[in-house]
Length: 197
Length: 197
Image (tube, rainbow over all chains, first blue to last red; front, side, top):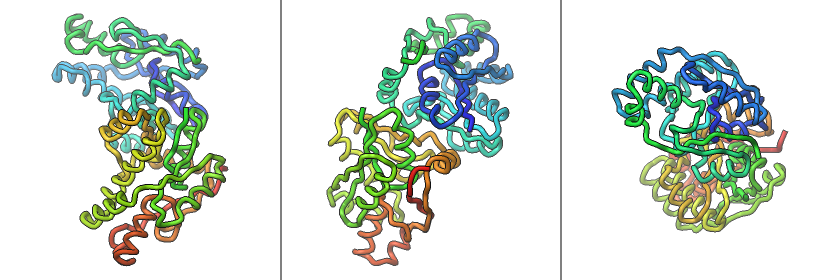
């Protein structure tokens, strides 16, 4: 069975791929709004890990809706969740009979799709939504990452990654300026995967 | 790193072991109150799967507390959850530095330990609590089981299994009679693992 994993080039989605590769035919998929070079970044990491990789173009209206959510809220949680669910649905619609996986961990707050949304996607598109890391806490994930992956880490505004935050930041920067980005997104450490160990 | 998996001989804890065996030194552990021959049942399945297996004797006061919970509630959810958390804690206390895993799935209602209880066990005993199947829905689990395991299924009162329910049923039968068992536990299909495919 094929497993298509939503892939950002970060340690969580990379580790999800490693956990699934013994059981499924893994292919990494990066969803993009073409506002930032996220596909190139993700494709490079995917190649280093030795996985097939493809890009899926998302409808710009999804990012617009996320932009509105984030401006209304003043924080990114619901916006990131909205994009993630739309990405799952988009990939599911193109992948009947497949596992659609992501890199969500036990401690993640966003994205964090609720069970009923996942069941709805599974039922409507005949897919299996799987989060291989959902039952792993931060320390267990870090242990596996340290044993199986070489990563680089830096502050989130200095590390190019292929996640939704990158393109959402870009849209906010284009429309509202850099100050608004700093106001909305707390500074945090991001990771990018270099290779397998 | 060693992963000790709470093992009932059922498909979920068996599948958890298969998911972890590429990444950890897996050992199966069955917690028992010695009210039913659960250790023998679990040890037989563990041997068929090719895993090390051990038994851990639980304090009878835990089953007594569960008995009181289930009589007060009239349904098994909180009682099963109580035994599971106590079992995680007992195994954690004997396994510093290890992963302590279980077979809980996305759709399970009980046992279903909350995040703060898991973090508390992790912090107090220096372990990593992991539920490898927590991000898998029923259909995805069934697909993996069908591909990797030979199982037998039967109604829950006819299949001997090495789970908490077996011993809790036995205690209720001993103290209150068979009718009380039927009143509290809804009839449902249980599985037992025969071998790998």
